[in-house]
Image (cartoon, one colour):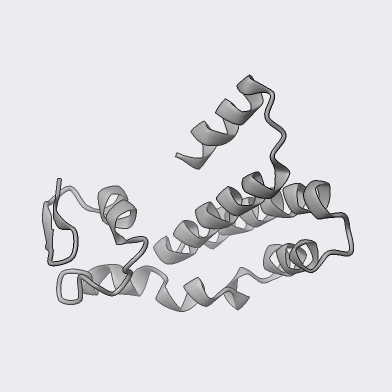
Amino acid sequence: MVKRLLRLYDQEGLRLFSWRKLHCLSAMEFALRRGDVPMAVQWARKAHENARLAHGPDHRDTRWCAELMKDPSSHPSFEYRSQELGSLRSRPHAFPGCLHGLVRLTSNEPVELEQYGPIQ
């Protein structure tokens, strides 16, 4: 989804580096929650590139993204990596803002969520 959005930005000639940084950080977070650390590092690298272009090399976001490239486990989402996927059915509210996309990516079975309804 993020790759498609970034391609669309390119096709439309939209530079929007700060928004690109945020989308890359979201993709990094999803990778961490899946337990895919190498993919998280790749997304952190893209976030860093966009942060540098948006804010410059000394901005706090640029420095934070540089740290995430070196050690993605410093992000709070790392503690929720793949071991949490097994407990989603028992705790459907464990990831309130991100659960909808996470379940769609990781499960072929419908999951009933009190807050969001069934996800197919």
